Amino acid sequence: MVVDGEFGGNLKQQLKKLFDESLKLTVSDEHGLEPLVAASDAKFRKLGDYQCNNVMGIWSILKPKCSQFNGAPALGQAIVSNLPTSELVKSCSVTGPGFINVVLSAEYMAKSIENMLINGIDTWAPTTSVKRVVVDFCSPNIAKEMHVGHLRSTIIGDTIARMLEYSKVEVLRRNHVGDWGTQFGMLIEYLFEELPGSDNEVVTTIGELQLLYRKSKRKFDHDPVFKEKAQHAVVRLQSGDPVYVKTWAKICEISRTEANKVLQRLQVKLEEKGESFYKPYIGNMIEELNNKGLVQESDGARVIFIKDFKTPLMLVKSDGGFTYSTTDMAALWYRLNEEKAEWIIYVTDAGQKEHFDLFFKAARKAGWLPDNDKTYPKVNHVDFGLVSGEDKKRFRTRAADVVRLIDLLDEAKTRSKAALIERGKDKEWTLEELDQTAEAVGYGALKFADLKNNRSTNYTFSFDQMLCDKGKTAVYLLYAHARICSIIRKSGKDMNELKNTGKIALDHVEERALGLHLLQFSETVEEASTKLLPHLLCEYLYELSEHFSKFYSNCQVNGSTEETSRLLLCEATAIVMRKCFHVLGITPVYKL
View 1: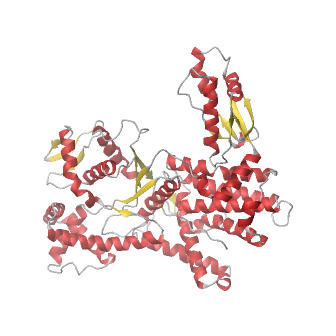
View 2: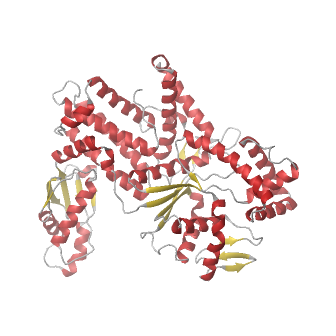
View 3: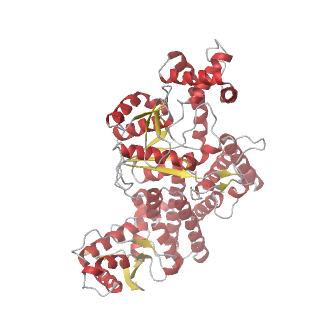
């Protein structure tokens, strides 16, 4: 059987299809066996570019009932013999206890890259069975400025959304703002007591709102009478009292305006559907759960008890008010039944893990979700660690205040601009070019410094490290991209013409290594989005720049006999780097 090459981008998926076909031919009576194909580790790369490395596991299943093979190596040889002929594969070998090593065809890889150059990087987009996903991220509380604590959720959530969007998934980006809880009772009651008759006009800025919040919180914590009034105010607000709703709307408007300024600078798009949006669905949601026999009375509150959890999920407090568990359940119901989402992803800090564990189990108990986390519709809590200062403590200002996110952005841009001026760029560029580049580099450095870490770990915030032009930083990667663009410009060649007429040859070892890594872009995006781990894409991007550096050091580009081929490799590298930057939410620069 001959499989015609389509010159697509996902080598791993193409190889898996070949091995799937071979397994069906080799052990036709056995169903449900799947080959495990992966790019070879560095120590095995001399044997092949990829490995099928679960032949031993397949043999352990077949051994008790199959006398056709006398061990895993023999099974491996049979799988290789039955492998469909493909332009993709140059050769296969079986080593050790049954590892199948695959050497790819350099000609096929070259054609795949040529195809991408002509038809665009979207031809390398991964494919997925999921059509619609909700990504719930950022989600600041109303009446507070966005601070460093919102940085990780916003950046990680945006990158996950971008990876899925590149994979042709419809992503509903949701900003589930806290606009319906206890803090509104405090704020509104404090306004009514301390500033009666002000008609809401006394508070017009986020700074004034923050000050009001601190004062009302202090009174809430130390004045029992005020605390009770504030709790009643929440119930009146949630019941739709027009006087309370009017003041609430003004507070939300001020907060929303300020948050949007930060999100615009970060180039993050979100649709706000806060806790209050789901109020019309709460009653029917609770009634449905009650009809299923899940809701119980406990000390005047209405709750759902979940096995192995000491604290139940509270739907209605004893005073009649709702909790964030109530709105989370209503939001999940809405997302599943109204928005028809197949996958709902929540991006919050690791401190909320217990809440999501309880919430997800309640949803499974209600029959809204399947019992396992493999079947759709499914939910995932994407947790992340803390950002600490260089003293290893929670990142704060010298005055021990929470660091405002807008101040971080300003500082990143200021430091980036200072570094550019130090290199004399203010004399070479226009003021607009200097400003735009400083912003792209500064904001990109801030994002990459966060995303390059495994999200579950804490990391230390350091402007000096993130703005360094050496090592695994956005500055280094942006320089690498600008350098490639400079090589192409200096050639004086029309790249559009070369794309359509030129051919790529991967004859040199570094040309082949670069070409292989370029073609592993698609599977990297697929793995990063499936595992919800953006740092895998950051690793790929850094390794791509390292491969290019080795290629350029060993292979002359401009003026060489292989100039056309090598310029096309430069162009392909720049295109893949730009797509990586886009998915990471970083603006590329073309000269530095």
